[in-house]
Image 1: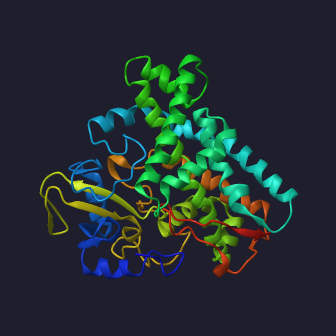
Image 2: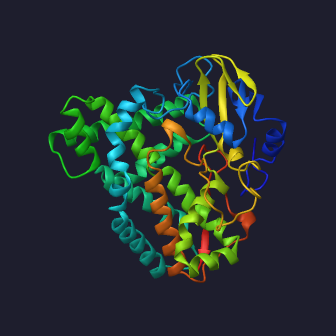
Length: 382
């Protein structure tokens, strides 16, 4: 299904929610394979919280073949083991320590924008470099390699990439991170990967190969969502000038504003699972071996969970949206992404009080053929 409005999920999702919390459908991209679509908020949380719905794409019936890391397709207890290795690096206190760095990097990028010509495209000048700079710093990866890393990540995430193209991009990223990890094993530094090697690999908690796979996952997941949320988020705020003025006047609103942007835009539209046994969801029996697609962008617009769900409202009370998933596989880097978004939106609005789109909305190219939604370009004046 395609979006008829760039700021809303496909209109058909409202019809599917009305039809039921769990609906049978055919996947056009998978030769008409039948899957279950989970359309509503509570049922989506149920499926994502229940480990009997497997994340392992190698299981028969799994509705998607795409994966970037063994950790993504793991189920407990293996998934729990590897996730615990990284929990401390993404805990609240560790992420809070990154705020000065993120602010410094953001200010530097905005300085360059302010010193340059107007209009300017915020995607290559802000949205793409900031998350890449942050994750490269966190992992201890040379930022000079960011063009290669972004190109390979984009190839892996394009919805129209062939399986061979996806596999090739994933393999390229794997070889790159394998080299990084092995070099660090010989010369440890002060970064996440060095600590992972010192605390886990050298202690026998995981192998170097497993560490490289985790590094590949962190590299991809650590910037691709934030890149797209920065561009699309700023564009969304520009479509709501009154709320943008309120946010500029009251920086305390940046926390609920980021939560609302995540809910409203839901740029990761779906998550895939397969039932490992017969399970009832929303009054529907899903049989063992049947694939499930959790429609995050539909669940985040569920009328049963959110008042006036199609309205964008930065004053909305947070309920716990599903933009980063839910349950044991909830995005490990969600706190980092939220912090980056808070810093960026607050800084951009304060620095550029006259920020405006430089072209009509119809001329903005949206990222329709990628798994993570966003904009290709965002030309603005200030």
